[in-house]
Length: 240
Ligand code: IPE
Ligand code: IPE
Ligand code: MG
Image (cartoon, rainbow, N blue to C red; front, side, top):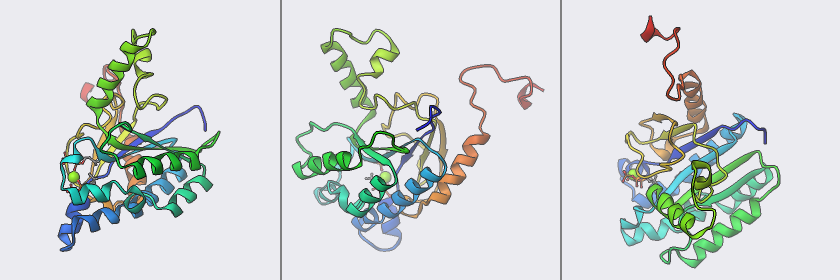
């Protein structure tokens, strides 16, 4: 991996609407998600994205029906199949998971699967670090980091020290976040790392999203003027 990082985050939204539009069950929409996931991971590899983070299950998603949650707790069925995990390993994609792993609502089978995917894809020099936010909440991540910081002697006296207590420690700040399905909100996703992220919202529903859409989003991202709080340059149209 080079020193230069490019961190893209994707909010996978619209599985339910994709199914409803076809007269199918919500579960059918979730089961289509993996095709889109594989396509964007392959495109991320092509485009030299170094970090890709996918929002797959939020801490608020537990409020869905027991039947839907039961399917979502089987990510090997709807998010990445065993064949895809092997494909990622072979293409130097290191998959890790972000979120509350201690939650007793997580089935033991699911936490075992999470650990096995992390182990299978673990490698010294990955081309891409794929993080899956699963049982993830941005507020919970920050609250948990505060609790951990209090427990350690080092504390969290600086932003840098504080970041070390986040679930997302070691990940660079998010450069670009894309949300599918036409919703314009973050829904508690990566509130800390998103601070200066460029945002793109697309109406495409997640099961229809493909690597070519990510390539297009990256083109749009490269046209953006990331000012980081500075005043516009004299070349900026607003100044002329
Ligand atoms: C996103 O699709 C998948 C998860 C949240 C797990 P949704 O299930 O939210 O689909 P919509 O928003 O109801 O269409
Ligand atoms: C955001 O989607 C969470 C994930 C994609 C995992 P939701 O469908 O849960 O978000 P809201 O409820 O529309 O804000
Ligand atoms: Mg949704």
